[in-house]
Image (cartoon, rainbow, N blue to C red; front, side, top):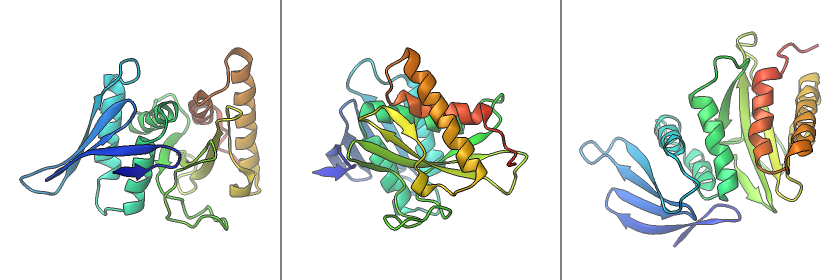
Amino acid sequence: STQSTGDKTLTIRSNEVLCTSLHHETCFYRFSIEPSTLQSISLTITPTKEGFWNKAMTDTLSTYFSEKIAVHPFKYNVVNSFIRVLGSPKDILQQFVNIMAFELRPDPRSVWRVSWLPMVPPPIHHDFMDNGVPGVILARNKTLFFIRLEHDERPNDPVTIPMVYDQATGITKSPDKLMPNDAMAQRISEHFRLVNTIFNQGNPQGPGTISECILDLLNNLNPTVP
């Protein structure tokens, strides 16, 4: 059987008592319930192809699952989004692992802290999505997801950012229809345009623009709104 993840699928390879394994193009994902208490679930990643996974990546993904996804209160749509990430093409999966690493191990030199938002957050409202639904959409060669930036100078005013990666163009941007019409949104869009322009001068555009756009915001986005 399969688990739909947008334009890719994960194949269920085993469904044993207290354990389920899913097959991706690069690995096996194994979810195991702790047998003595039945109170926790862990994820292990076993690579099946060389050249993609390394220990830092597998540790990041399993730690993120334990600390951010498989936690009380259990939310189905959070897990749904995480499974969509696990089933995404490997180049997109790499970018999500990078984002998780930015969140779990923030660079002390960064101005902002980032969090991936597995569900569509309350500030976002549009006629094709509601708050609380799975916040990862892979369709028509595009990937939509949401992040939140926090800054010490804005303790009660985080910045929520929808991001879209377009496989056809290799560009990452923040969709205007999901952003507020304010100065901060305009500033974020300018950062994205600059990163895509610079990235294209020396490299073919691709999923790497996702991480580059986020890193640029973490290090350079001015927290003060004019």
